[in-house]
Length: 91
Image (cartoon, rainbow, N blue to C red; front, side, top):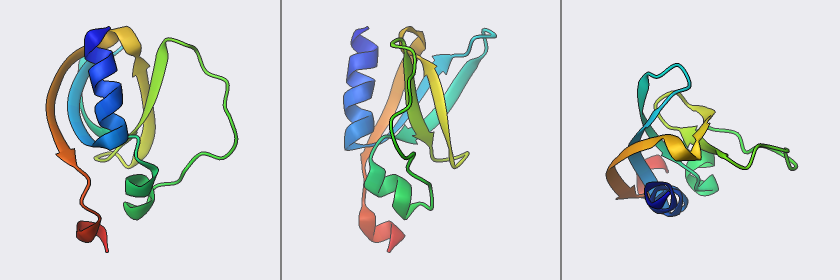
């Protein structure tokens, strides 16, 4: 879970390149964030209200797909890069 905890922290602080194993066994490479400011500046929508979700699942905004995705917290394979969000790029 150490990888997940590091990833979770970085997703809240900027844009992270990471990979995880999907339920079908395929490894998915992703670039994502949990910074609402970054999501809205990139044209994404912020979910309204609270959704009930499983405790072992993490949602994130996929920058490449421009959509919300999720993965099992125990399925993180690697954290391959971190970039602080630069709002000037999106103004």
